[in-house]
Image (tube, rainbow, N blue to C red; front, side, top):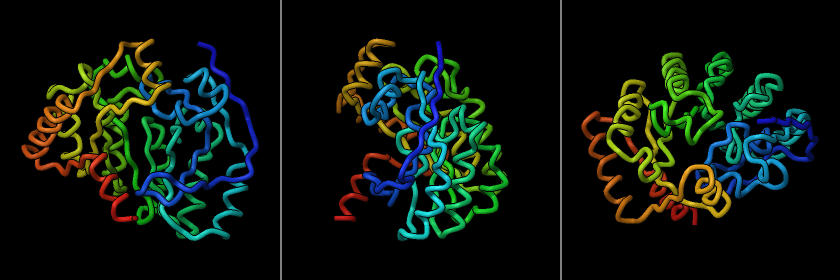
Length: 269
C-alpha cells in the first residue's frame, strides 16, 4: 500500500469537544495510517484522508505554534488527544506534535487525556511523568490475540500496547484501557475479553468497554474489507454480562463507556 503524508498549516489547534468528558479536542493529524477497518473517525473526516482511509494523513505542521497562542486566550479545561485520529501514529516519530502539545497544555493548566493504539507513547514517558498530575493515558486493546491484525492492520501489535500500559503504569502515569469496539463474532468471547481485563487488573488501570456502534462509511468499509456486522441489543446484553462477570472475578474496575457518556451528558444539561 502506498502511504502519502502531506504537511498542512492550520488556523486553530483546539476545538470544542462533542464528548462530555472533554472540554476540547486536539487532533494533530487528519486521517490515520493505522487503517482500522471499523474506525468511526472516517465518518468525521473529510477529503483524501477519509476517501483513502489508512493511506493518507495530513500533518498540522504549525500546530504547536498555534497552540501556544491559544492556551493564553481560552479557559483551561480537559483536552482529548485525540478524538478522530491517533496521536501516536507513525508520523509522530518525526514531527513530535503530540509530545509538544502535552507539554504546552499541561504547562498552561490544562488536563490532557490521551488515547492511542501505539506503543510509541512510551517514548514520551519523561514528559508524561513530569506532568503526571495533569495527564492520563488510555490504550485501546480490542483483543490480545494476533487476529487483531485483521481489523487493525497497521496499528501496533496488541502485545506492544500491553507493554506500553505496563511501563507507563509502573512509572506512575495514570492509565486506562479501552476494550472496544467489541464486535460480534470477533472479540466478544470470554477468551478475548478475559486477558484484557486481567491486564487492567494487573496494572491498576480502569477498563472502559464499548459495543460496536456502526457509522455509515465505517460500517460499509468493514463489510467490504472484512464482513457485515450486526450488533443487536440482545447480543450486547449477553456480552455485557460476560464482561461484568469477568471484571467482578478479577476485581477490576470496568465501566460501560456508553452508559458513562450518557450519564455525563445528562449531568451537563
